[in-house]
Length: 320
Image (cartoon, rainbow, N blue to C red; front, side, top):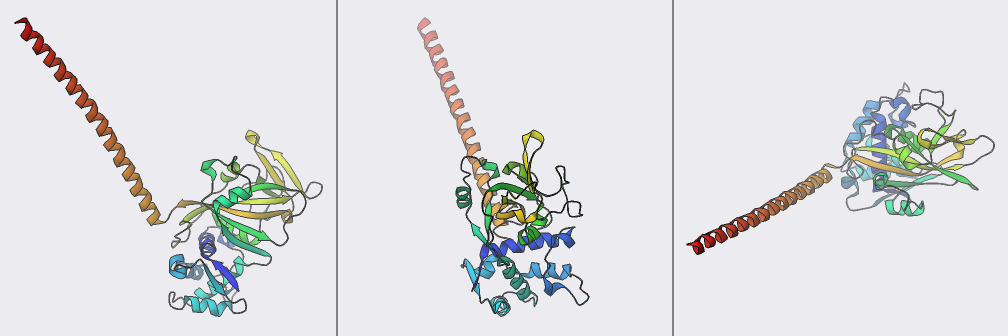
């Protein structure tokens, strides 16, 4: 049986939607779902976007379940049965099957873990600044995980790149049109030793999935990687501005993604409403507190004035 966790479903819907809306979609959405390629071998992005927007939200598809189960040799029929009463788009089962294939792609698996578990596994309790803590974490496991000595590095990029990054891993795009940030320290895949530096390279990218209820309709991403030291100059450390340390990996096979870190920039509307309501309550309490202090001071001053007036009257009375 193939398991599809509710958070993994929403992750791929968000990443697919972001890539499909990108102005670099020809490069960002790779691999492209074969079902949406026509007889002329043209990739039909418009049809894919319509299908993405017709797909049910997590709450509709999963209800109270955490996972959906699909037979490994019958995923398309199971996907059709799963969507039959909640999505009328005939393309939807094929897109759901594509997501299943991506979550269980070759020798790689994607699963959701808690932020606390990630911080514990990476030993970041004392080193990660509060404002850099991710909102969500997905663990990527590989059958061919690096052995021997390896380095840890972070890689940030625009969110519309992460469907391809998650599926194809990090690739050396030096001297190609897909390279965005240059190659100051030579050709290779660039990673940072400091999470804060990598965070500066991650951005929200293009439009996300409008039905996202958990991750948010706009996300930014980066990956936490393990880097095999290799031989010779396969992996080089460079020191940039402000003593920021970069790792340049010449061969893509030497770098493996271990965790995908997500930062939600625009939360679900209900979450935003709750946050706004909480903010208004706090503001209300603050105003009441200020009024209370003012009234107390005013009351104290009135009492002092009354006491002074009483003392003056008594003094004048005694004089007479």
